[in-house]
Length: 410
Image (cartoon, rainbow, N blue to C red):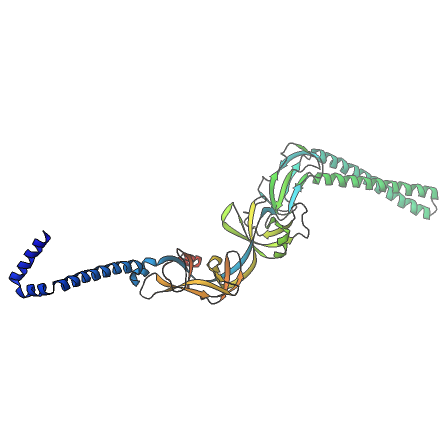
């Protein structure tokens, strides 16, 4: 069937192209071999091309497919600091337990709890009736004894003059002296009683020992109190103390007058600044901690005794430094330290080439480090990547604003 079809095709060629038909007839076998060879070469080339496309795509295509994204941030100069975190309780610079020195019924308070009080103002008072009665009685007795004494003193003077004139005997003179001495002692005793009564009368008023605040009232008016009873808590106005305990191993890090930033939950968006004012010379045996006190100005009275406070002690401060996050540092052995940068490509927006730059690292904390050599301000530092970084790799970058940029925009 195939032979008949091939004969018909050949006869058609001979009819229209006799010369071509003669050439095919004379070189049929050779042409057959050449045709199959050509078809084999074409198939081989197609297969080779397909494999090459899979294994070795075009360079531009490779770059486009393999470029990954990174986040960068401009290198800036800032104040580098190493901090030590502490937590504790805020207390008044001076705290007093208020007590009366005498017993009696508590009559009234001059101030409400939490109100400011000036030094020597009356905070609370006892019922003064009994004290007034005693003071009045003591005053009357003293006046009487003083009159007796003055009379005895004048009588003694008269007897001394008479004795000089030998008008009275020595015995009478001695009697006059004895009466004068006795009257003087009774007057002194009455005077002491009067002073005590007046003192007790004054003690019915409890005054503020310094400018401060009645932080807590413990006994209400109307109750009977003794000299042992604490009627109220009183704290000084102005500066407060953040008292904290730190492990003994960290004591050597802290020094008097180190700057401290203090925050508390009541004012989450406000910083209070103070300094270390005291470091205890001893270590608590049970907790193995040392107590330190941080003095914080409190002119507005916002910080109150008993509040919970957090503090950041500034151990080291180095101004105008180039600072990078610790996680961006690449260490190659002991002597080589590098950071990844992006060099922007000209004419290509947000595209660049990775450069691993050798740098010298200075002071270092858990989160950041100072670069002393090898890095300049305004260069683009890689802070986050989606792929493996190596020198010369093309990337797409997105710039993240620094805190300094955000503040300048505001």
